[in-house]
Length: 468
Image (cartoon, rainbow, N blue to C red):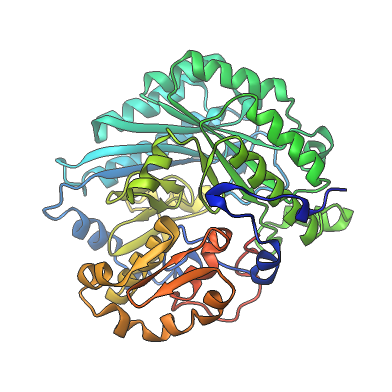
């Protein structure tokens, strides 16, 4: 068996410090938002969704990002933490597009018509559960209710098992220029253990179709820490995926949260999950092989070719982070549609109902289908800025933040800065009087650094997955 210590990562001239990762691999939020979604509340009177959209659109012509959650899957992948609806009844797709049309109309009448949409993302579930004609219909509805910028980025998550060439054509017709392939692992035994059999030939075919239709950027999703995975088998998965030449990779740590997703308990019953040490070996081999192949470590679990817009944004200091992960679209309000989707404005997070019954009941009554959310205080907004800069820039500039936040940063956050001493001692950050930078050795531990500025954290077992 391969030991995690056999692997080093040459990026930025530094090897992964696996002892450091072991020490700090603790439960932590992923910081796709701040405060984290675990802080959302169901007392909607204090949130006032109507006012939230009104405030966001009052005299605002800033950009919009639209997210559509398309929850249907034919079968359940046992590792999955997404909000899904399992069915083989494809008529459900047309009914759901009817729902989305109602929701879009409700949101559009609250939206400043001068605002331009710079990003559209179709997530799931399995967006290509929708037949091609329903994908086209969704695109027509988006065009009907919103104004897309001429350079709008349109992306979709694709399951190669449920993909036809006609899907690719329909996506291109609605303007899609980016795609993300759900691969997870190419080893047959692992696939059977997670109830997702997917021959690699399907991945190769999907990539061939996407390139033929002119998609300018294709991401591949992988997961490490799955049942029956080893460092050796995951190294083979990395090699298989490198052979199809993706522009980006998302290499996620499997989040074992059976208190949220009971289907994951099957892995415990079968005793198939790798040990923390084995999981660390997978992380190490993925990092080493991808950086050796020329991919840039964007942060956490994202890798991109140096010429990709994500890598360019990292170099330019314009990288952004939202509920879909790292993004190049900073400054856009995010409006989410469909089950469980989350909207984000400067002041508020709003999350939709998670069941079809509750979602449709709200729409039938002419209400926004909001289940929970959070209205941010001024201090929440300041800390969101701080944490997002750590996650995207891997550094903080106290002087620049003082100007941006309207406070004396070093004074206002003296306690948090003082708490960094152990991270300095362990070589995770380099600290000076006017800021700090995360070291290459500390890069895998960005979430740990960000936690030091998180005012919402309380001892609460089971709320977050491990860092690695």
